[in-house]
Image (tube, rainbow, N blue to C red):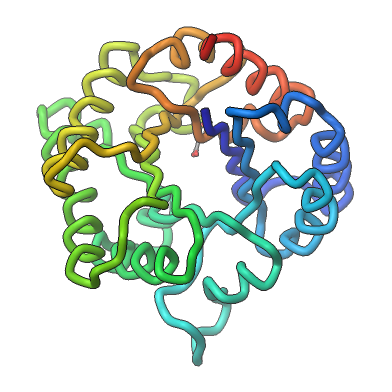
Length: 254
Ligand code: PGA
């Protein structure tokens, strides 16, 4: 399973160092068959590299990157810059980027294509609003988000092997309103169908769930065969709690 921490814009420099230092020594993060990834604020990437690289196992990455190689894009960071700090991963299309930075499916497709081309593993977030779900449009919305990216990378002849999908219903993020097991299972199956249809074959891309995952609800979510891990916000900010969640994922995985 993949358990990815999305710190968002949280933790001071001291707190971040404390967290990563503890995590780098926790055995739960380096077990075979398990992948922990830290999506840290860009200014902590050097710190993540310094602290996590010696584990030879824990991954780290940026919470966004630009679709272009370089240029006059004040405030942005490129895939090359992430690679320069040892990142193996990038998080793209998070609903907070879509909402507050007006990122479209097309822009996210370009970012995904470029990041994959550069050799990064991409965790691509998809998910519907509460209004979408209440009007029964959730499957359609998520399929469109995913198809836009899959179609674009196919046109660019970029292999989707390093693409991981995170299903994050927007109404479940940071709210404590975790989606029900049926809702998660149904959407993950739907995402698998979209992936398979696009590839014309059975796909292996991992599908993570995100949205108020914590130590209380983790076991039953990880128990679903359609769930390959989680993208975790609030419950990833404390090293001990996050380690407990990783342990729960390993126990659920058998
Ligand atoms: P949450 O955030 O776990 O705090 O709901 C998840 C996310 O936004 O990735």
